Image (cartoon, rainbow, N blue to C red; front, side, top):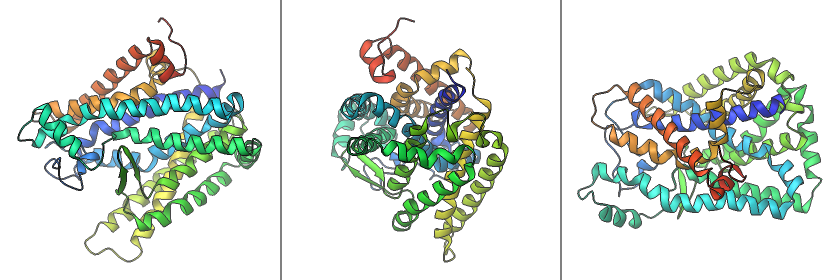
Length: 398
C-alpha cells in the first residue's frame, strides 16, 4: 500500500473521531442558553444542541468553532477523492447501485430506527409525560423528521448521482478534472487559490441571503441553505484530485504541500483567528456595516486553508500504518458514523446533574461514544450484510 493510501486511511480514523468528539461536547458549550430547548417549540434548537448541561467550558466553544469551519467541507472533499476511480472501474450503473446500497439504505434505516431512539432523551428533559408513547406522539407531530448527522448521507448520494451522470455523459471529463489538479503537486498555492475563489463564489452569495445556522427541511431531508454549493465545490474538488490518481499531484507524500506543512499550519491558524474576530463583530447589538460580508469571506478563507493544512500535515506525518486500534477505527469509520450520535446523546443525558466538570463530562461522553460505536460497527461487520454496507466487502472471521 502506498504512503498516500496509508495517510488517507489514517485521516479517515481521525476524522471519525473528530466527528464523535464534536457531538460529544455540544452539551457543554458556554455560548448556549442555560436550559434545554423545548421539544415542540420552533425553531427547535435541540436539532443542533440536543442536550444542554449546566456545566460549561469555553474551550469547547473554540474547539467546535474550528470544526464548524473545516470538518464538513473536508469530509465532502475526502468522499470525492475515490469517486472517479470507482466510476472508471465499475461504470455508472454499478457505481450508483453500490452507492444506493451503501448510502441510501443506511440513511433510511438510520432515520427510521436510530434517530427516534437517539432523540428520546431530548424529549424527556422537558417532558411532562416521559413515556415512550407520549414521546412518539410528539415526535410524529413535528413538522419534519429529525435525521441528526445522517443528513450527510443523502447529500453525498445526490452528489454521487451528479458525478455518475457526468461520467455517463462524458467519460473523458475525468481527464479534464485531473489536468486541472495535475499541477497542484508542484504548486499547491495555485490550487489553494483556485479552491478559495470557487468556494467563495459558491458560498458568499448564499451566506448573505441565509444565516449560517439556517436549515431547510422536507421530511427527513435537511440541509444548510447557505452551504449547499460550498459542499459541492469541495466534493468535486476531491473528484478532480482523485481522478488524477491518489499518488500524484496534490496528494504526493513528497510533494510541495507535504514539505511545506508548517506554512499551511501557520496560515490556517491565522485565518481561523480572523474568522473568529469577524464573526464576533457580527454578533454585536449594532454591527458595523460590512462585518457580515467580512465574516463570510473569512469563513471561506479559514475553511480552505484548514482543509489544505490538514492534508499537508497527514501527508507529511501519517504515511505509515498506525497501531491496530486506530487502524480498526479507520476500517469501521463509516459504521461508527452511523451510530455514534445515539450514544453521544444518551451519555450526555445520563450525566445531567452529576457533579463533574464539563471537561471531564466531555471526555467521558467522547470515550464512551467512541468505544460503543466502534464495538457496534465491528460487530455488524461480522455479519455479511453489515460488512457489505459498512466496508463494501464480505464479512471475515476475525
